[in-house]
Length: 410
Picture 1 (cartoon, rainbow, N blue to C red):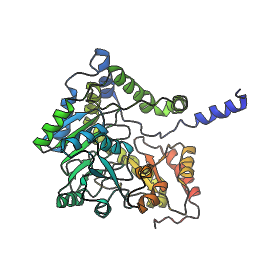
Picture 2: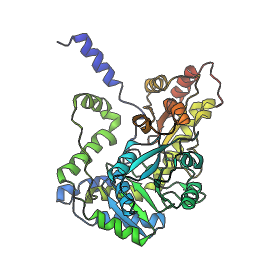
Picture 3: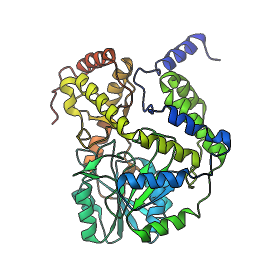
Picture 4: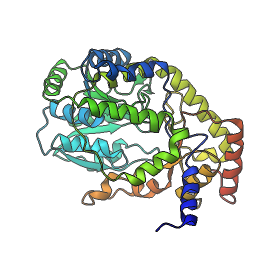
């Protein structure tokens, strides 16, 4: 039987999950509310929005063709199959990446080969070349946290080896490299809707390309995919409103729900729903203003960090999208858990980075830089404007946390 004292401690810990600057709160408003009401009129699944959204993304990126899907991993898998790469081939992907990218490779029946990362947390030509073999048929290059990988150099490398390249702009839609939008390099690109992305929403993705042959093949494959059930889409959108849009007020309840919920839902590869596409269109219309707001929030947080802003990695640039403010903590500094706890105490919900995907496949080339850096990555949310009071508390907390630690990286 649970004691009263233990129950009080549990409730007190849950209250601590209500933050002034919560994690990944989407900038949703009236447009998104209207889009969310489509299921009420029976238009959750079928409708014109998926094709409208695909065309709008193609126009925004200046490419010729686009095909919509329900998730980024589905788009990656279909893109690989549309490239007519034989099953079992190797696809090079960063070890430090969201697991869903790897899921897309496996969905296509291919084998991920993990490349090491550089100090900016992206792969380099050198790290990709180190794991490229005669069996390599494609390089998947995700751009992380609103920043960008050296995609132009990687494109040239892929071309020199006569292998395909997929430019995954899921986390950095709107960012540029040398003036060119990410997602437009290589054979095709991927743009996704998701929590904490440039286009914030429950789900959705688009494969973009200038190759008519690749487009027609991807479109043909997309037609073989099922539609998601309406109840799945409705539940997903409703959950996003409750647990994401109003996270500042539902954070504690979400933690309780996560502790009680033990049944993971299996992913279904499917076509894009009408309601998800409507949400994507709404986000696309406000993407530039949202990016400016995130940039201002990053500036405020960097100012609060003071000299310790030196630990920010290279996602902070004029052509970045500021999805996260990412720091790599020094080896002699505080741990990620200590840093996250200190910020939580002053109202900012920070989180650690990814667990490297190669940890489940140790047979490949040792990835020294990935293994050295990953446990020191911490991410701060950029969607919510931190008040002056919050910034002041952050400054005090970080100064205390880093007492005696040099302020310059390296």
